[in-house]
Length: 442
Image 1 (cartoon, helix red, strand yellow):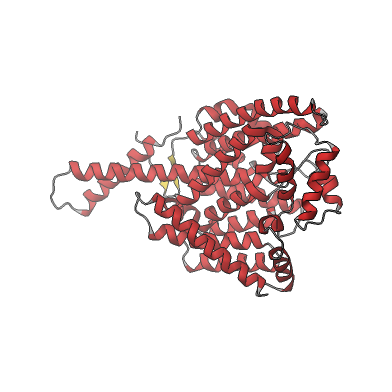
Image 2: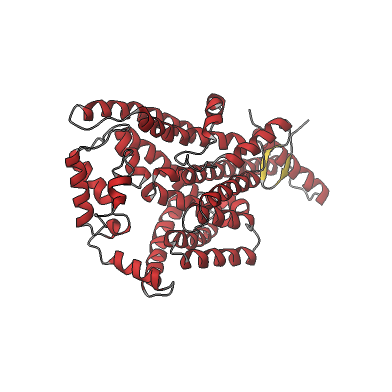
């Protein structure tokens, strides 16, 4: 019996055991759920670790590369820690470095779990389950729109109304208004950019135009960001947003004006270019240099935030990239590079999944890139969600190419005669069946 496809948004074979489909749905629902009071990693990492080997064994190549980079990062982090502690930096207890190790391990393991699950249930349904779990989990912790709740809710709404024409634009307008009025400027910019990216991809459907798409996305995205910043600085999004935007634009360094923690990171990197190691706390002199750099960048250097959170018992530089460098050295940077490549390729190749995710998938991946640069360790669930969508985009693109190839083969092998519609439909069904057969999970 040849497997068939249940729907355009379910590119996996329907001959999947019910138990596996139920498990896949449960995995996606709990994938990014955090337990209040244990917020560093999603709770799903613990059962996922028990199945890490089968999840990673059948994972896409990109996920295996991410897992390999993570293994290198663990070795690098331990080696660097041994060196830096001999130079006067403080070591920490297992209660500090243990969660940090779990933090980096959970990224490839949970992305592999998502890839396994999305091959067994409808891709769109799986992503909606993931986002729904994220919305409920973040709403229990806080009802503030700016942050995880708003990001997951925005992505959920945009995916839910994907392919609905004018309704999807109304949904986009609603989330744009919510983000702008709640001082969630990065979210508003990402939502606007997702519309522009989708338009670019629709205009450039040529499979040979990946470079042109990438360049167009960067150029038009930069113009859109400039216009959005101008609008916020002009007061169109409210006085509070205008005041914060003008204050940050007046800083000597625009990047440090957005996140002053990057000034502290740069100061630390000057004397420790290879990082500090897993769970290592900088010396008092290194912390002092970091605080002075924040002061020079115009940050609120007297705030307890920098002494108790950024340079607290577990150093958190409010950037996934910076944290990977600090705790895992060169290996951590390799993990960040792999994450960035996966996300950027996902945005670039999102045309083939437009009917499945709409602007929601693009928005989530753009926010994942933002989180890679400017979000703390506890927001790792958002990066995992973005990576899960990016892996799904790559899989849908591969299947779309396979379908086009098989369709072309069918056309070449058929005699050039006019066929009734019923025979044409039968040929199309044979192509779809062959795509589904090739897509069957192993």
